[in-house]
Structures are given as structure tokens and as C-alpha cells.
Length: 391
Image (tube, rainbow, N blue to C red):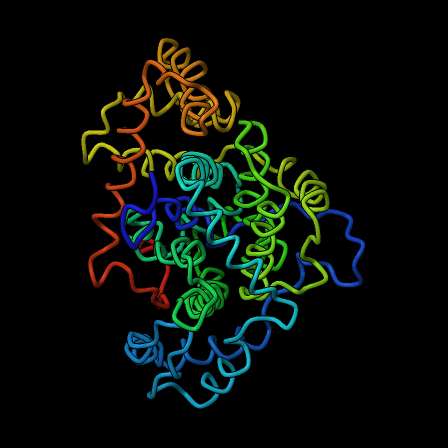
């Protein structure tokens, strides 16, 4: 399965798992701790715009700002325009050749990436306690399908072949997301519900975004290796580079960004793995996300979906989320998915039993979100002006 439409399927997991991921505080080698590093300049600006009631006008102005080479829209406050003029560009160390190769890699491996981002990273986000609590009590937590649709562009724009080119959209999308993060940092501490369950004062630090990266890029890279998906060294390096540029554009300081996959694995083991655990908010979000699939015929049972989550993440995560067991589906997945990959990669000469079922499942999952996310209003990344309604 290659590109199904402009809103590529692999963006689902990114959309579900990107905003507001956080982790425990490790011993850090850098002089500045990423868990106490936010995005000071844009945070100050966004606090003023929110308190001054300017955000609706900013959202309206930004509707026409889409492609990387689009001029900044008129109607923005002068201070915001000046800030965006500085950050709306690739870092000096970005390698365009690697970024183009990464986009091609995403296209070639989109089937596996979708499953890992969607039923791996997206559901993993619900067992990252700080993330689950931040997402649940923010404005988007009240309507997870709408939230997924409105953040859907991040994943596609990162994986698009022209993502970092002038005609691509990822640089603009990343900067819009950066504004959303700044707004959430100002708004969420005002929620009494969030304050009652949070163990932090301000969400979405540099450390938080790094945890998100590890639940996405690092996790996916490890699983591709575990699943024996063929990748060249150049593919792996390019895939990492695209994520390095992405989290830089989200405001993570360069000294915190892992330089190699080995460094990323080590950092992930330090900041992500130890903090995975269940929460009330996480269980609610997981059920919302998995429940979205009831809207269309996936060609599989809910038991199969639950078991695929367990297969991708672990039985421990499945138990935390109280996903009922379906042992027949579990056996089918354990034998069928490796055979599915082997056949797709030309390593198995005969189509395995169950191939069409896996193919239908992937396509149906994709279309569930493609149908929602391709509407003109759903794909807009907009700055929130409040928290979850009851918050």
C-alpha cells in the first residue's frame, strides 16, 4: 500500500501522539535540564495574545499560510510576524538530500509505519501518564476524532515527498504546532482538573517533546528492525535526520537531540520506558481512540484490534488498558503478520493465508481517518483558546 491520498495513512499515529508528551526527570548531562526548558519567546507572546483575546484573529489570518514558501499572512501581530520570520526555516545543519531520502523511505514503508504509529505510538501515548492527563484535560481531549483530524497534517506533512521543500508544508505545519504548544502551556495550568492530577506546573517541556519523539521515531525504528523490515543504513540515517529536524522545528534545543540511533535508544531507555503506566485519563483516551474504528467495517473484530495493540506494544500495556483477550486472534497475528511482511518484501514466494485480511484491515483503518481529515475545516491546525469544557 503506497500513498492512499494526500493525507497519508502513517500520519495517524503522529496526530494522536504528538501534542504534550512528557516523562520522568532523569539525570541529564547537559548544563540545562530539558524538563525545565520550554519555549520562552513564543510562550511569552502566546500568553499575551490569549489574555488579550487576539487568538481568533490570528487563527483566521493563518488559514492562508500553508506552503513552506508562502509569505507570512497579513493580519498577524507584528511581534508574532517577527518571531515567525526567524523560526520559519530549516536549521543550518539540515541535509536536504537526507530529508528527500527520508520522505521516499516513508513512502516505501508506509504500511508498517502506519500500523506502528497508529496502533503503537498512538496507543502508547495513553500510557504515558503526563501526556494522557495533558491531552485529556486540554480542549482536544473532549473530542478525540476531531483532535486527531485537526492535528493530522503534522504526520502527513513530515512524511510527504516534498515535506521540507519550498512547495511542501512541514515547516509551516511545525511552526503552527509550536504555537499550539505555547497556548497549551499557558492554558492548561488554569484547569483545576489538570492541576489535581498533574505532577508538573507547566506541560510540554523540551523533555516532554523528546519523550514524544521516542514514542514515535525511536519506537518505530526499533520495531522495523524487530520485524525484519529491510532498511539500508542510508534509509535509517535519513529517517532519524527527518525527526531531528522535526523536533528542532518544535523548539527542542539542539544539544538535547540524539545524534545517532544508538543515542536515541539510550535516551529512550532513560526517559520513556521507565515512566509507562496506566491512568484514568489514559484508559479513557485509549477507549476513545480504539472506539473510533467502530464507524466503519474494518474486516476484523474488536478482539483482533485489541490483540494487535498487545502484539505491537505488549500484554502489559494491554492489561493496563483492560483490553479483553482474544487468543484466536492473537495466534493469527503472531503467525500472520510476520508472513505478511515477508511476502510484501519479496521474501516469501507464496501469498500467505490471511494476507488479504491484513491488507483490508490496514486500508480500512486508514480510510476511517482519511475521510475525516480531508474535509477543509478538519485539517486546520488552530490555536486553542480554552481547555476541556468541564475544565
